[in-house]
Image (cartoon, rainbow over all chains, first blue to last red):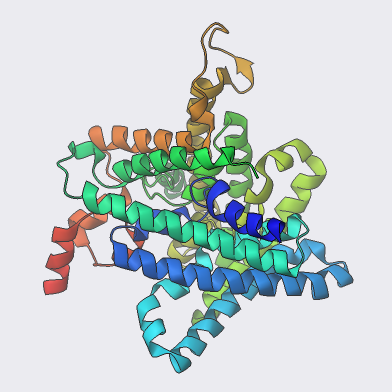
Length: 192
Length: 228
């Protein structure tokens, strides 16, 4: 039990997917302009990444590994994720239009979010079982949401400051991200 | 200028994928801890980019328009798998150092971006030159960032000690925060001397109001577009 909780905390805080492993930077920098889209994207990522980790784990354990087709995992996973995002999109559109509306354009964008593929591949490399994969996917997505919502909060204040011209736009966001990354490095000192 | 040379110039300087287009940020930030990693990552991406541009340009009349993106992803994923296996066999040390970021070349936006923006409209030879230019532009930016971080954070360049041993290197630069700082400084310098990133050019000329893929804070522009 303790291991499983550690897996979530490790994914969310200690090995934060954005600030420590640099996966999903594009959407992290692009979408974090204001709070609401950031939260929506975070929700969408939690949703897709948890399911994608589960499905990728099942596909790997029951199809690829028995057939000895380990080397096909990159191709298979990216197809699984793309198909999954499509299915989730259609399913949500039918069953809960309100959630679908809230996630909006961010759902299809997740296919190209390298964090989802990255987590699926890392899980397999670490030899996690099904439950561990799901929890690690969930924890990682939680970390992504935390980071992007925090950055959105910081940026809404930065926008009101009078910055020197060369710093406006991407540079100041990256400096803010660097400071957040330093703060998150502190979690590496956690011991259980 | 010769149109083939023009492609190289375009990729290296005019539309440098990392510094001007700001594509492929994930690998740039992640593997630039050492200059040599930058070269390894840059060249493997270049190889995939050249081959994917070639194949996609060959097949551009065969692939139906509606399913082009899935087809591109499958082509790129196959090429990445080949590259990964080759590297594991012949360059195990680079393979170890780059780790998970090699399979993640599949989702590198430079590759899909060039397929969509260039290779599916041009001849194979031009597409190969475009891939070469873009790939080398990426490699140079990555190596430069790696060199900066290695010198400041470790006191070495390409593994050779260059700062005197008595000077303590600034460790933060080889840690994750250093990546954000170094790239931020690169862009600050470019902004200060007037080289505009693609996003900035777009916002100034013809902002389409698509703010999802843009990191600039341009609320005034957004209102302008929405009011149209």
